[in-house]
Length: 573
Image (tube, rainbow, N blue to C red; front, side, top):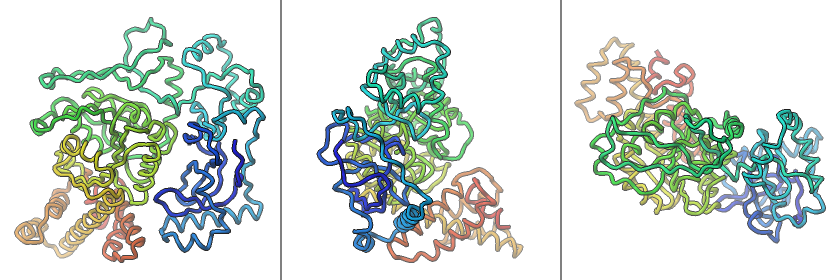
């Protein structure tokens, strides 16, 4: 490994492309499973370091030339960088970290022990943690990884009682790493080989379970085959895999509880009956599309993609939601990385910035399989800073990125396909989606600019107006009740006046009819209002009306947690 000027625990300023210098520290390689792909391709002249960013809690491998000592450049970079809320949080975090180190209450992790024979290894700069470990402290395997056939032979040669070997995985690794002649471990680096969905039913039980099978291709049905009685589901397979049940079980265990995504919704009932004439003018793209996140909105969007005869591979944390989509013609995947590996363009529709980042950077996530020729479209409502983070990460892997948030409309509009998509980023990706996928999902899509921050900003401004209108309508209804006036009369007056709007009328009717179905969750709208206020602080522009509406939603959302925005009325009476 090339020796550098920094050691683990050093506080620094880290400068990423299209991002200001950020307070960070040198992290130990075993703190995360992110791989240093640049160092794996070639042995660099300058050393690479794993860097932890304070405030955003992200990791990245960075070259020494992008790092500066914290104390030496503190005054200069504090003045240069924008005083965003996240940047201020990062400064506070690094100051707290340095204070704890000085007080002795926090000790930086020790430098990893370097073996003498490691100098000739090209991968010692970026150790790649084993994907079989459920801990972020997993160790690395010495020597080249065994092939699948070699692993199968090793597994067959093991005795059933050999399970004791996994009791102290770290101890056994230390012994093997010190002995170069030891046999290769049966663990595989699953960041290299993504997981696949196991077959739900198998009629060939008597066949050897360890036979390696080629991936099954999804057969595209003809136009005449799309009817209610002749719509079969294809075999699920996105990558080459073994049928070893123990390995499949291990893979499923690792994927549990890693993401914090959309709230649980009722299991959808998807069949061929949703194929209507609205898709007849849509020419399906020959590309393969992926979809991450089947929440309230994601389910409706995938139905439109399947209905318009697109090839779709889906993933969701709650696997039970996927069953009906498999019957409708979608291909299932076990991890986000599987979706990226199998598809040309992947859509992401998650609950917010934290979920979008987690599915991107987590083990077996999007970045594990992202590369040239792959495109990523973010449909989630996120802040501009998160859009830049995702864009930089995707582009650094050779992929293409398009931010395409859906203007707040709700489940009803999504079911009808009456959505509006605003996009910014890679124009080529937009052109690939505009005439096919976007046309199936929405009534209209707009391309703003190549700046990936533009679309998220526009979406947050539109959400601010949405929240203001809903808040005003709820306030009027409360006053009507206090004055013993009829809400129906007020609705008729509004319909005939210039004050009328589809949103105002929809909210009035929903409250008056006492409907409790969730169309736009109050938690999601309040999240957008909060991001709007953060953006106004960044731009040094006051938004007092949005701030008041946000406080109203924030104070009442506990009483209507998970409910529709109209539930604000019942939380206030």
